Amino acid sequence: MSSPESVQIRSYLLAGQAARQDAPQPSLAEQRTDYELLVEGYVGHPVPLPEGTRIEAVDVDGLPAEWISPPDADAERVVLYLHGGGYIIGSLKSHRDLVARLATASGMRSLLFEYRLAPEHVFPAAIDDALTAYHWLLANGTKPEHIVLAGDSAGGGLILALLQTLRDRNSVMPGGQYSFRPGRTWLVRLRAGRRVKLSIPSFLHRPLTFWRASMLARKINTIHSFPRFTQTCTASHLCVLMSVVMKSCWMMPCRSPNVPEPYTSRSN
Image (cartoon, rainbow, N blue to C red):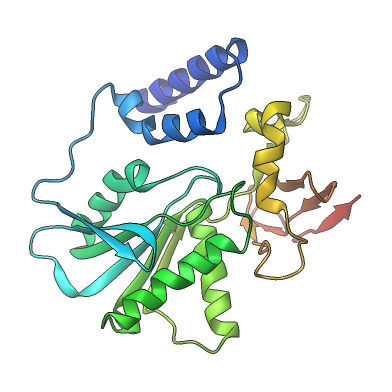
């Protein structure tokens, strides 16, 4: 039986989907603003930060950033946070509350920064900015073993790319990382008797196709263009990465207790 919370969330998402079907397609700027106000719009009011949280604006070698510190934070240990948003949206404002709560739970001050977004800046811009932020912490006296990388969705994917880049360059590695929902691909649900549908139908809207596809604007062959990630799938799900630019469909390796063998295929 569904919980009251899940029913409420589902109703909210379905209502928003129905409204979007009849509304004009929003511009990229509008999409970014809407994303920043997503949580506020859901709860109906601005969300206060945890009590005692301190916000300090800082320039990280040209990248807008904020120190987000809970009371009595460990001064030596740092969470370097990379926000989600499909490499296209997301900002300090959209993730300030989340990072503040993470900082409070961990007792560590957190550095949240804005990396360059597509379509204005294609890869490897985002990974280069992640490297800049990491090296900035090192240059300012933070020991690598005292740095924890954290990020959601696209930010989690960037963490994996950052770690592989550091490894390939024989650079010092951070003390740890936490990626949740890293580098998510479009998720296709396969159910008996039903057509295959993307769980994020806005990715198929023609007015949005170009700028959403710009994250894939480089040839997919190196970690610095678009890293391939293994997704964890259930037996009823298939992870599909749709590349509009490459005009191909990449089915990523999937592993699950319900799936006896991992599978990989590619079709042009």
